[in-house]
Image 1 (tube, rainbow, N blue to C red):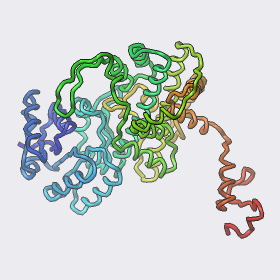
Image 2: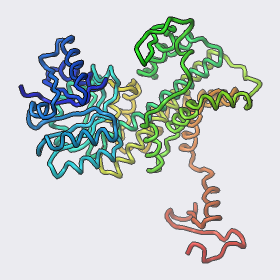
Image 3: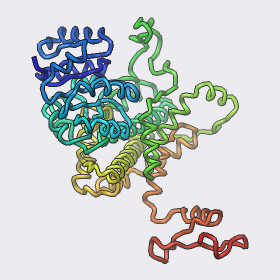
Image 4: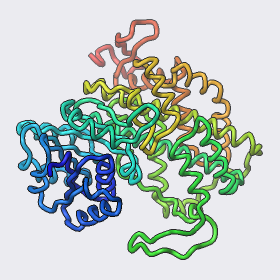
Length: 492
């Protein structure tokens, strides 16, 4: 039998994606470093009546030999050294015109380096971000491929069937050459960090106002019928309602006895991160693109993780002793508006980061298409993305989502609520780092004149870094002899 594609790496994502491919009528060969996972994948295929389309191999040569030409080998392994080892494993088994597809969360420059090393052999390398977790992999993820157009075209028929589908079509598209797909997936994850932190701050504000888990869950469920509809809002109200039961020990899958109250109240407030958030912020700094909301979200995870330090600090550092009176009804409405405005800022930052990287690398990423393929299957899927898609269709050269006519109108209408929420958070010592960072980003972006003139003057004073003048054309440099320590030769 000749198989349409092969998949190597049968962890949770790999197995589920393989079953997805098989369920769409394609013949898929699977292989794994440890043979036991090949057996378990075949067993799952049998349970789902997919054995006719999925076959396991324990020998890599037989695995490759079973594939149709051009042979298409996708792998889902841990980013880094494991990817290099996998490429080395298959490089000598594949031939000119064959295709490797990396479906992991990889640093885009690593993918571009690997593509170059395979060029002499004529092997095409497609680096593709896959979002949606276990459920998405099995039933339809959002997929973000980048690399040679020829490689994408060879995978097109499979990808469009396997991907999630929204009312705008399959959630996959060709994003550009090189590491474009990895880059878009990286920014997707950075935006995800921002979304999650903004939602948690909304929860914290409501909790601080005395609302119960059930009341907060009801609020999020109501918001999920509005402009805030999203996967993350949906899972949030489900999380808040879950009683302390059905909890398994990760080490041996044993079930803990049911407890009192809710699971969320017994989860240690220490948030992990796997690195893609750091990558996004590092790229923002490198390219000079402000990523305030996502950066605040990442900082929040760092601070949260140091539980012992915070427990000790609470005994020493005091917060406010008086709390403002608030109307619960107004507060809930204000938080909704603040969350929406902050979300616009987070996505504006993410899209501008993709735009800048695309311009510098010559990828030609279509920002409207990037938003479209996030509409289903991925973690940040949301109704809101339709608005972003429309904004970039209306103006592909949009400087920022903030100045799109619809988004600008909505922020102008809601900003007073946003300001009240951030002010309240500061006054009562409640966490609102990402909301506050979003508002600061908005206020700096909307002002024609900032206090940066003083900063530049300071730079010129101590380092002769020069400055431009408001009464002269941009690009002309000037230096001031600020005091007796400066002389006319400085900076020459």
